[in-house]
Image (cartoon, rainbow, N blue to C red; front, top):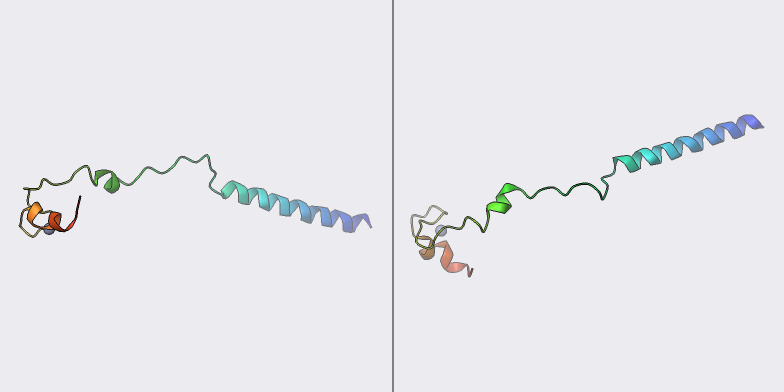
Length: 72
Ligand SMILES: [Zn+2]
C-alpha cells in the first residue's frame, strides 16, 4: 500500500509547489509604486496664460476661448 501513498504525497507536493510559484508571480505589496506618467505631472503646472493663444488651436486668446467655460 505504500506505493499508493507515495504517489498521493508527490501529487500533494506538486500542488504546493504550484501554489508557491503562483505567489511569487503575484505583484507584492512591497513593489515600488509606478511613477505617474509625465503627462499627469505636466498638467496643471504648465497652464497657459490667460492672454496666451489657446492651446486648443482656435487662435483666440485662452481667456476668450477654453478658459471661459471652465471655472478654474
Ligand atoms: Zn480653446
